[in-house]
Image (tube, rainbow, N blue to C red; front, side):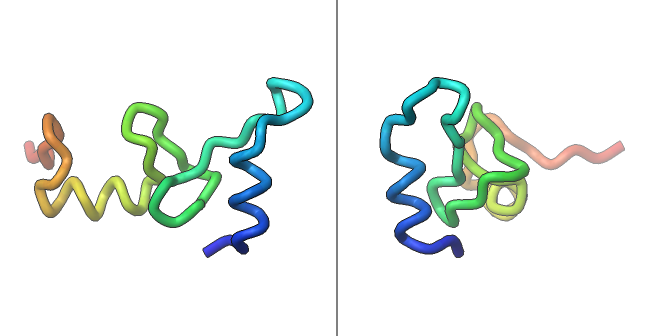
Length: 61
């Protein structure tokens, strides 16, 4: 978990648009972020395997 100050800083509007950081809304992780779901890869996988993300199903072939 990132510090609360780190999350608060990333929620603030940056001086330049290229400095915006997308973060997972559950844990605050910034790497491995999926824009469509607003989650990091770790939480995406957990929620998808539990069937809590609509339109996502585990693939098997």
